[in-house]
Image (cartoon, rainbow over all chains, first blue to last red; front, side, top):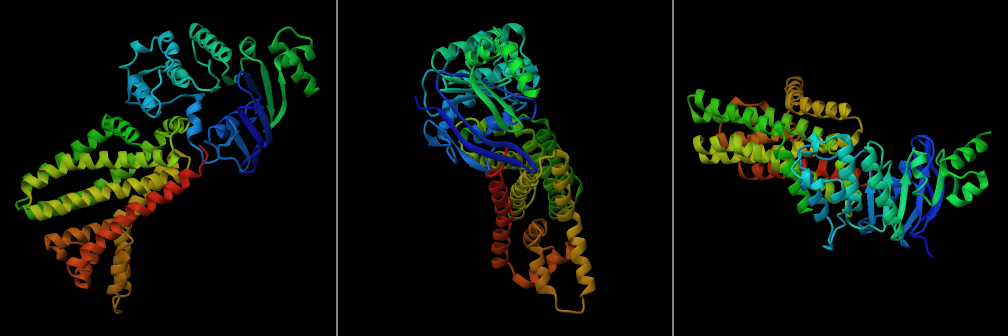
Length: 239
Length: 255
C-alpha cells in the first residue's frame, strides 16, 4: 500500500540549529504512530512541516502522492490538535466551531462523537477567555476530529485533560484507527501510548533514530509493555 | 475569506480597547465642538487629535492584536485556508473596526457640526490614516517574534512620524534657508503620511498659515486639484506598500 504521507530527506535549520536533519519517513493509512523523543528533538517542527506551518529548507513531503509545497486543499484531510490550543478571547465556543465548519467546502455530516462526549453543547455560549486549559484542549480535540480526516495529528493530546476525558479521547483515537485513519501522536506519557500505538518513531537531535512497529520493539527488548520496551531500547542506545 | 473577516471583526468589536478608543474619541470630538467658538477652529483641533491619537491607537491596537492572534493564525493555517487570505483578512478586519470606531466617534459630530467639505475630508483622512497605521503595525509585528520588541517598533514609528519628522523638516529649513529648497521639502513630506494628511486638510480649511511649515509650501507648489490627487495617491501607497511587504514576509515565515 502506498504511504499516505511520504517525507523525503527533509532538512530545516533555525539559525545555527539543525532542527530536522535529513528526515525521511513513510506513514501508511491505518497506522497509529507514536512520535517520541526528548524535548527539542524536532517533533513539533516535523508536525508543523507536514501542515505547511514551517517551511523546510530542502526535501519534500507528499500527501497521498501530491507534493504539499504551496498546496492548501490537502489540509482538509488532516485533523490537527495543537499542544496548546488558543483562540480569540472574545469568541464563544459555538462561534469558533461554526467558523471552523464554515472554512470547509464540503457540507458532509460532521463527526460529533467527541462534541457530545465532552458535553460541548453546554459550553457553546462560553467565551474562550473564560475556559480552563483542559476545556480548551477539548475544543481543540472536537475540531480535530470533526471533519473525519484521513490523518490525525495530535500533539500531546491528553496533557491537561482530566482522567475521564483523557480516557474518552483515547477511546476515540482507537476507534479512528480501526476505521483506517492514520494517527500521529506525540506524547511524553509512554504508558498511555501502550494501547494506542502500532508503530514508534524515535527522533533524536532532529534525525530519525528508528521507526519500528511496536511488536518488533517489544520482541527486541523482551518486554510485555511498550513503555518498558521503549525505555529499554533507549537505555541500550545510550549505553 | 469573508467568513474569517467576519470572525475577526466580531472578535475585535467585542474588545474593550476598541470601545474605550471610540469613547475617548467621541468625548474629545464633542468637547472640542462644545468649547471652541467657531466650527472652523474646532475642525483644526480635531485634525490635530486625529493626527496624534488615531495613528497611536491604530498602531498599538493592531500590533497587540496581531501578536495575540498568533495561535489562532496557527489554527487557521492547519485548516484548508490560504496563508495570504488569513493575513489579508486580518488587515481588512482590523482596518474596518478601527475605521468604524473613528466614524462613530468623530464622524458623527463632524457631519453634524462642521461644514460638509471640511467634515468629509477629515473623515476620509481619519479612515485612510487608520488603514495606513494598521498596515505599518502589521509590518512591525511580523518583523519580530518578540511582542515587546514589536510594540517598541510601533512606538518608534509613531514617535518618528507624529513628532520627530516635523522637527527634522524645520531643522532642514533653518539650516538651508538660504537655498531654494521648497521643492525638496515638498518631496520630503511624501515620506510622512501624517504630514500629507495634514496638507490635504489644510487645503480644504484654507488655514495653511496656522499649520506646519511644510503645509504652507506644499500649497504654493501644487495648488489645489493635482496636489490633492497626488497626496491621496501617495497615502494609498503608504497603506499598500507596508501591507504588501508584511504579506510577503508572512507567506514565507515559519509559524
